[in-house]
Image (cartoon, rainbow, N blue to C red):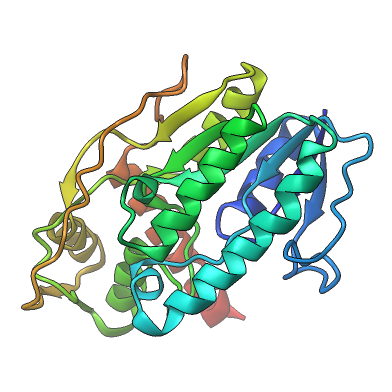
Length: 270
């Protein structure tokens, strides 16, 4: 299989490319982060001799970025430009397409969710499949405006021995490991699925409980905030047939903490 991954250098994309290559499939990476000429907002997409297209390119980040007022116009303009450039090119080839969407596509009061919904509609018109990510974690990120909550907690615990929440932590989330996401996307394409599917653990947990587990593992104290968080209770649309998560949240977090401690140990020894 010749796979084109749009957004190959992103949070999910780089690990998904490794997953496909581990299966023995050919991967063509396409991402502005790797090559300034590979800007999905303007570039010609190399679709010749491509068997499958995975559309992961997007202006995205964790909740700190997604809901930041100053980022809304950037998200709107950037992501609509990607759609307006990429989708017409895909239409001219009929190449099998998977569009990476989000649980927030059901919530039209956010720029992120609204633009993802437009992507879903366009994908349906092209006969492709949409998969909705629910809070993907796994790769440990550097603390930044765009980093995600589990990475933020692990990094805080490691550097300060404290985990400070922005909210009370009572809000609920479903988390899914990037390895399980990679398997689900590949299976969705292999089965030639159409429509929309959820890629999630299908298990709710409070953000506070996640912080407490990380704190226990790393010997850090947890400090809840005062702001009330929000639980996005979006309806489930369905699970990818024959797929189920294999990495539970506790094990996934332990993998992250071990990797961080090993890296720190190697740096100290060198």
